[in-house]
Length: 77
Image 1 (cartoon, rainbow, N blue to C red):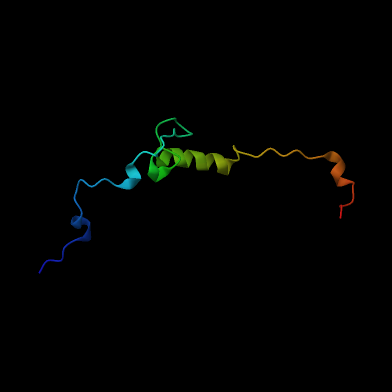
Image 2: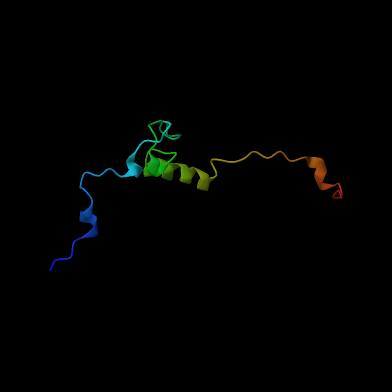
């Protein structure tokens, strides 16, 4: 007796929800193409990896303003 494969239980032409465009439509922040649900907010794994690489290299940074006089003052209660 043959055991049916679970992957064959769905139609071959079924569309995966992850391949749909984001609703409402938004552009990929890296390349400007329409974003996909699977890689939201990006259009592909490539663009997601480019963004991750930018974070890891320190290309994205939150600016900090340091006051030079704060080092000499005692902490406030």
